[in-house]
Image 1 (cartoon, rainbow, N blue to C red):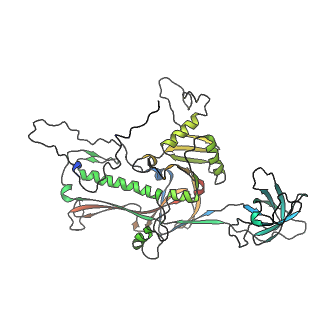
Image 2 (image 1 turned 135 degrees about the horizontal axis):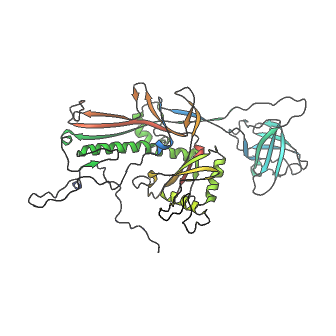
Length: 481
């Protein structure tokens, strides 16, 4: 019989972070006329375990300084050229030559197509299962058009029509060149094609404040936090949790950040703070970069090998990175486990798969950490996608996982002034000489050792200025709902 998890009792989405004191924060049942003392547990119980969601960036990337408002880098273009939308309207089926128009040139209308006289091309009809192909040598190039002479005596296999826009779209691939004896060399050269990308750092801030009186007051609850702090001073717990929350935001901001559109409210709200002449507000986070420059899987979770075959086919067309890590939510993790278990001939029984002996004294391992199919894929659970206070349980805009290539790539580093190895995913923080804005903490006020003002309190300020760089986003995969 199918079951479900009851809606109540549920989970708290805001278990500890409050801006103002409320009645539920204090014990109100102290009655000195009661002769019976309660048996109290002094130590806080950590019912949510480790509440931090950070760790993703530390696993896959590195941090390095930058001293500019704008970070720019160049990524290599393709070495070879193939046009997939070419038409020929001037050739009948028996003509031994034709004029072709390139409709998908990088800069259409400029005549900068990468086809030159003397090159040999392979031409194929884009219509599925048509079987119509030709091989030809280029005899002339004018603007975005080129003339070919076919190697086949039967001439052009594809029949053109009067209107080029209505002609069957064909793919043209350059595979070499051929020249007659005693002729001049190749006419024209090709310039290396680079893609220039940029990003800007954003300033992230937080603050914690406590009065001097509260700092001198001891509590009856022994508090603990994820970073190991403990004691009976409640303000220490709040300060430590503020720091942990700030640490999480340093990572989640790099994941979720988006650039502000021109004319948007965010641009207007942040323009006075950024100053005149600076770039727009916002930044390109990991999700934004992959959504716009990477690969997307939408409509659910890939649950079969055929789904991963489609993913692998796309990776073949990109950088073909050998090792990849998939950071997944719980549903995606289970789907991969079930998919791999089904490959075993005894998978229906569910008792024999996995690299272990079926010892009756050991627990059955129903999970997998990775697999190889064309490439190596390693699976890692991503708490950020499961946490109900973050991306877990979203109705819209949900993300099931992110595939990140392992290793590094070579880019030109503007700080070093030379080519350097950089992880595909890394963070750049602002730093120069005496000002390091990677992770700044300073105290103000007159309490807690601070002596910067007459304020009878201690204010702990946090600041970081950083941006994430996604190099080779075409090798990333984002799995969305």
